[in-house]
Image (tube, rainbow, N blue to C red; front, side, top):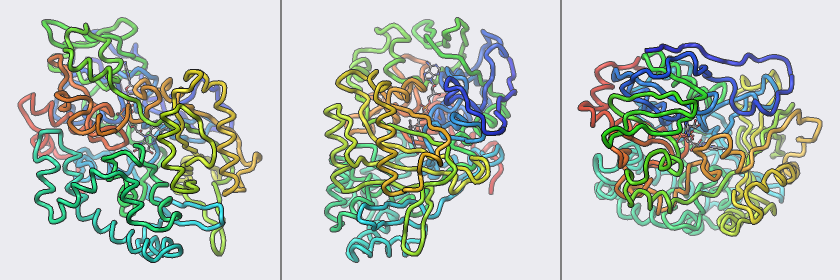
Length: 566
Ligand SMILES: Cc1cc2nc3c(=O)[nH]c(=O)nc-3n(C[C@H](O)[C@H](O)[C@H](O)COP(=O)(O)OP(=O)(O)OC[C@H]3O[C@@H](n4cnc5c(N)ncnc54)[C@H](O)[C@@H]3O)c2cc1C
């Protein structure tokens, strides 16, 4: 078996512009395909290397299995990557920045996979998030609860009390919700059974079934406070949809833990996972798009890549290829009609529109007694701006009238990401992939859309003048799909996290336990329960199921060879 250890880290140099063709695929693990044999046998072949499939692979190599990961792009990590795609020395997160939910993953919380030993370190911004308004007022979320409540009390003492009460309510149920998120469907008690043991469980059943907006509107009276509750993180599902109640509480995990960012960039997580996998005998190959599943005797026995190389799996294939693409990689009759129907009816989500800047200054906002330069800020002029996102998406309309926007400047908390005194800024808006003229029209309008966002931000952060901006890189919803096929139709979480595509229905009824209809084939990643975001939950959950099927358990694997404990 080939053992690949060479890495391709890009060194920081002087401020030199990079070719746009280099885009997001720099600065991380990059192993030429020809460094490994083309027909080695492995126990497990992993198709695609996003953070979820890498987490699953980390448990599998820890268990002693021979594992190979085949990544289609020049670097591993999927939507958890960092690249110098504007100027050398400016390390931009190509997609995700905040690593909130993964902090609750037992992998991190119990240090089951000790990624700190492999270079992963977190930074915890404080202030956590800042929301300025056109009337000159603002609300800042601080790690200190009293200080945050004082910010809301400027507008409404009742709303400040509601924030404190809802935080306590959330804290009382957080471990119950977390236990369900980090267990495969059907493993352990269901959410409703767990809530039945909780003193406020019946109330929580109601809250989770409500819409995010219903909860916010009924608990908060002031529109500034209502906007604040939806500004960061902006819920990934339309806030008026039923079953989005949990999103009304999504500000509270970051009240407790901040919005953690890996030191050096989001990609530090997947770079650490790559080091862990290789250190435990795993093999990682990049530039290896998988084209086909190898089926023998009705069983998935390996994969074939676009370059013709094949990789055999003695035990299983684990895929994180989008289900819309996966079904075309084996004869359709092998999937069964139920599965094909599920793929056919799979829906995209409200997409992101992203602009990355290399700057000489962070976004700076006026506050009482001076200015603030937060790592996270947002614009949400009125609650209606969040409400209308779903309507614009449904109509395929690009709406730039006071658009909701998130502004991330991780260098404000982690100066290692840019040359001394410089900054990286990521502006995230929500716009539809589908346009009346077709998605290709994004190539025509994206610069104009980016400039409109920037001019809007300048009303609140007037220091971001043209002379402070050294370079920009735009990612339209179409670009997000081009850079990662798993972002199907620009979906940053692989597809809508609607009731129709959640829980036991993700990816579809009957197939929510990571086992696919073709024996020997497993699926992980954002198409699977509990969905997208940097949670690592689909990855660890898939490992739970696979290890059980192999006759062991994740507990045995973790306890047999503990990684270094704190
Ligand atoms: C712009 C943007 C901003 C975001 N911000 C945040 C944030 O701040 N916080 C947060 O929690 N989440 C954020 N998200 C969402 C989050 O990053 C993703 O939901 C998550 O990273 C998905 O991880 P994954 O492991 O499921 O798959 P991915 O990261 O999508 O990885 C899948 C991998 O499979 C590879 N692949 C696909 N097909 C093939 C094939 N045929 N052959 C070989 N390889 C293949 C892909 O190249 C990719 O590397 C953001 C997403 C985007 C796009």
